[in-house]
Length: 295
Length: 310
Image (tube, rainbow over the protein chains, first blue to last red):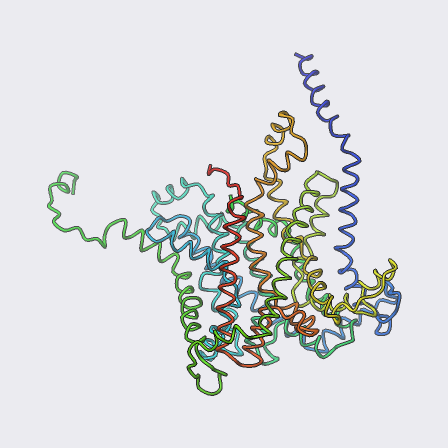
């Protein structure tokens, strides 16, 4: 017995011995990845470094990587030059509303698509997939005129109300994929206990779907925080500006104060990166769920 | 009431609205109703409206004027439209394949169980979530001719500096380059896919004497093809929607060398206030995407390998 184990172990290590042949190859791959990583990080380093430079230091050749002394005051100056505090509050409000809308609406629709069989369901699901592929710009003009007629221009209504109607095709798709993985026995047991479909959705599926819900909440955050075209079309008064149009406006009046522009850009990027580090796993989760849907 | 009674009771008419089937259908439609309503409000309604709009001349101030098919005729001798189609096509044909291949290669490299894969994944992924506006402002600075990062690197390597956003030859390549910074978004999806391929497939192939290249061609690529195909389609559709970069970085210039299709559409609609023609451009965009998608499905889609449903 012991000899068998030993020989098995020997075999295992023989298989392992196969690997060191690749060592040189692996070192090569590692070097390629490191060089790539440096290239990927350079713009970030450049952005942060420029944001901390004194006004004249920005126009120095060759550029210095480490600002001396670091001008932390750039951030204060940039963020009070235009009322970025207000823009951040405005954007945070939109993010909150849209997150709520996406979480409720897309999971609600997805339950119908995933767990109830009824005539016409597959037809409507094809429509969901079709709208997913429909570019926003195709209907930009008619929708804009519609909102003008409704008197919604210069309000947050065009940027929030549509989200409540389904929460976006991709999110419905993602939630549906997730709901389909929940065992049927669970629904059956709940039904025997007297739950109706709405109760099953709310008390059983929603708590179980937390990972997927966090993923779509993150997508909603990114989508709203980063949105530029929506606010550009619909928001006119500076009181209602979001961070993205605030920064774009800042750029158009500050043509050469790159120190301040980089400080504002860094400030706009930090919440997104912070969210990423706080919830890294969920960022990749949505990609994974998409994958299961493709097979 | 016992079963015998129930059976013996005559049921001459069964109300269809009380059947289980009807209840299920009703509940199903209640669940998907937000989407259906949204589809009518923000999709079908505007589509019908857009059809009418494309046959008018309307600046939103004076009442709309019906002009029949004039807007569609105008498509054929619109030089700026031609330019925007050229710019967008170049962008699509260069950046989509490049992004796909680069993202896939990175994922393959990263899937070789190298040290520090998590750190690499994080670093490569981060650029793809930088907000579009911050991204555009950052790259405007990187591309700065005199003091930008890119020219500083080029000059350090002994090359001449390039007027990235001012030279008509380099403005579009600059925007393509900027787009490639976000290649990590696709990469993480491929990486997840690669990690999902069962190890036994490779072991079996190795026993059958397949080399690394053959394993790649016969296992990795077929199994990854649905993901690659999905990203190809979404990449093509996405490349027709590049707006923020062109709008903020170059405003379509110099000499319209970065006049992306949707930037042109935006200008026609919201700068020239030609709503009718802008709606027509929306229709054209729809047909271009439709035709491109069909072509890709027809010629590339049939090579996609789908595993049998479990």
